[in-house]
Figure (cartoon, rainbow, N blue to C red):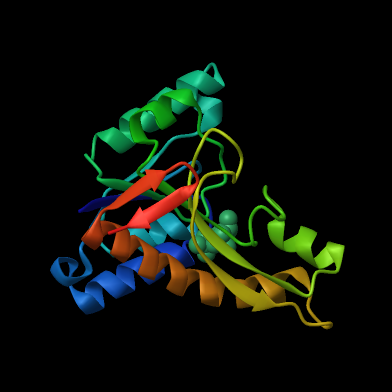
Length: 202
Ligand code: GRF
């Protein structure tokens, strides 16, 4: 299976996938990363891809006249690598109709909270501010909402009294990286069906 990974930041989830595939072998893992895309230049996620010798592309919203044109351009850039599965690993843009028309049903995202709680760009901060006792991470298929698609897997992380946002996010990311590697491998190896809100992995 061919994976395209989309990033916007440090790319530690991308790195976890790269390390797992290097350790296990693409054959046994069931997938290989064929390209990495981003919405901005100069991020560690792109540097990680380049160090791994992977093709990269950057699709910036401000380079396009409209959001729809950006969405179509992103879809084109991803499609050029003929992915079977697209993985958003810290990609911080909401894709639109064109992208979902082409990749819906094979586009997964990882979110650092237990959806449906705390969706959006500040899930870690929101859980902390709310005074939640546990939070976690969610790997889900992307639909036309924000962090609302069918849930594939979740991992629970305790919130400690002394936590600040970055300490909590780091603890979440330890679970998240393992969950993403496990889920992507299973989806790639076994195939899956989406039945309403249920995801059935063969
Ligand atoms: C991850 O926790 C992801 O869920 C969130 O941002 C973080 C990205 O981390 N959206 P990285 O870029 O993979 O290190």
